[in-house]
Image 1: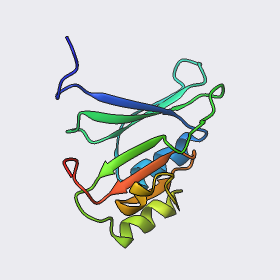
Image 2: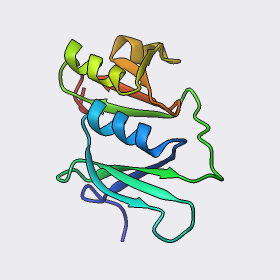
Image 3: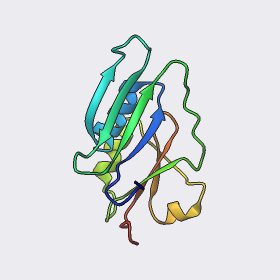
Length: 132
């Protein structure tokens, strides 16, 4: 078996604060919390899964005392919105820990807005569609 268009993608990222990250991604960005596990096995790990039930992808957040986020300027998660992000949406993201930053690659400043999440990872909101 090889990956195909129906294969599911999971992007996993460490977080310093599960509550802050979940608030950013769910209440700010608007992803649905698909599941959450709170250190049920004494490992020190907490997990949260966010995305959309109908999508073939989701974001996994991992809070683990031994792992610290180490994002680079090229660790981008790009959401193609198919239209510009409105001011109310951007305000909601910022109220939940997001911070607008310039992109390393000027392409993203021309074709979107770059947001730094509470752990320093970058989210690009592009008004384009995937096929643009």
